Length: 388
Length: 114
Image (cartoon, rainbow over all chains, first blue to last red; front, side):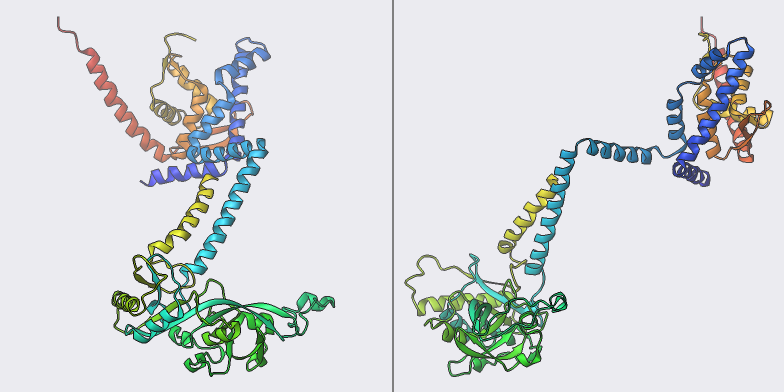
């Protein structure tokens, strides 16, 4: 056993100092040739003849060196390196092919990274909420997650499975009256003494908002980083219009100024008071982090549309001891009552059952339906890599 | 080359090299090749290159060791000498060779039944 190990070590050593061993062997062969030639000369050959005869006797030198290397070294490892050298030579000879291969690989790796990053942020990352595994999104089995305000209030008033049901919707408002964003980052621009064109006072800019029911932050169990989140009362028509800004927007647009709290922003021409700043890691339940959150009632005031919540999404926190399946059963029973209570003219055909899924920012990885889309995308970009 | 020269049996070259070094003391590759040919009265076909493959294998097995030295003609040459491990190996291989040779010899002495 020990000798076998020593033998392997010796071969490994030989592999590592192959160059020296080659020179050594060449010198040894040279000595041999000279000695052989001398012997032939003694037998009466001319120097040239003797040399030639000696060479023939010894055999092809390159061949011999190859055999010598194979005997003393690690042929498998050497073969592997030879393959790599061959591949590199081939690549050098076909620059077009090389360029295409490298490009395909680069694009493949890049797209894969991008898609996975997006997928990770959207679906794999859990919701930033307390006990996110208890927060469920209610949607329909045909993957339609939108509900009307009437649906939402019906479920909110009648369910016993959830500690609270919250609703949200995405909306874009026009913000005005916020003058001159403090140059973001300052750094280079400030140092160079140049000032970027600023938003003029009175000019308006679009802001992304998520419109939420008054209990939205309570249901998710999220506290404001500064100030406070909405009170349920603030979602009533009599309440003063208030809003919460995202940490990102606060830093980007207000340069993290603590004075932002209590400030009035003009949204769609109506003054709304900033009552809180969301924590930095809170991305919300929408695919992108909004600039601000406003209560549902503020939306109706801002848009002057009679109906609030057009394509609302509903989230609920399961009551302790209530399983997802129990809640799902109750919700479907409520949906049935809702249909008999308000026979809808528009909803003809078979009613679509409600399903619950873990709430997160994008798809739901526990639900095969919604996982199919992202998986298909991941799979297809994976194929690009495979082809490359 | 003479037709009646035999190829060396696989593995027997090791034995020949070890025995040569044991009997003659340190030698260079050329000397070993010559010596084996002389002893076999040129009946064995020793490819002189093959000797070196055998030598490197034996060195790696630590049965022989190699040192650069000066030949009788003042030429730089690599000299091989047998080690203690090599002597043990030689004894073992010689014994096994004798056994095989004895068996084959006895087999060849069997006379056909008439």
